[in-house]
Image (cartoon, rainbow, N blue to C red):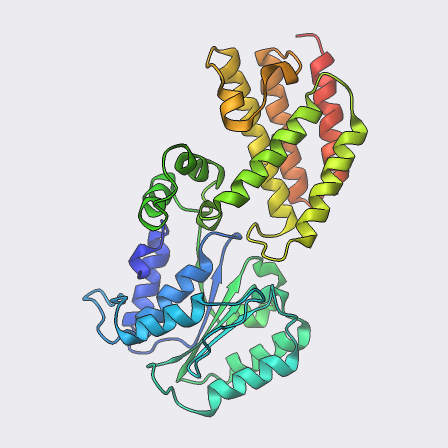
Length: 355
């Protein structure tokens, strides 16, 4: 794997390779973008290109030399807490999502990086995942390193929410935005890397990941969200009023989300945004069912048409609009329980409205 294998993101790939070609490679980079768009993967490929022993003509990594294999191994073989299973003095990975990162840890590790020249690699590599989650003291320690850069080391910050970073840190980093990938590239990547996802499973992963390639690789996580959205659809559009049911379901999902140790779905907000997105797909497929496409609801979501109230096409379109409005409200930090309850009443009201 190399920079060229990053899904989509043509501008980012060209930018990264231009940094590699530059006679004065920068020492600090910030990879920004939504959760699960492939920022960590992109950072690893960039680190390999910077250190490759036998680079390709375009300065991309070969992917097979000892340096490339070393970086792949150190950054991908992690324990449940996100710590390196095979640490190397030239390579440091700090996962702030899994580790309660404190100042002593940051200082100790950075001092190790700065104390000596690289033993094996051309440049030492530091990758800090979810860097916006560092506390203020740790952030200031990183800022000090950026203000007094070590030419023999490269620091890469992976950031989901740039607004939470200190402006002084942002200004000292080369920024690379990793965006959602096109459907065709995600499909091609899955066929190559996860051949076990074929047929309907492949298409479900491509459809429901919504351009976030990290989600596409977590098929079980996708199925979990589809099942959750289908459960909510049954409650919201069921034939009996059950406001308590929607409260309980959302509380159940929130509790399970917080308790999940190996959480690949991102933050709770992203999780429920995905559920709303899938909920909109359910109602769009309900339109197909009304148009005569047989068993589409049962095949995709295990929902029988008998479980859903009879709705006209006009009402279904209006409900889709309500769901899209709920997505915007959730992005604006609306309370999840209240939001879904409001959606419940909105859909109920739409169902009673005369066409």
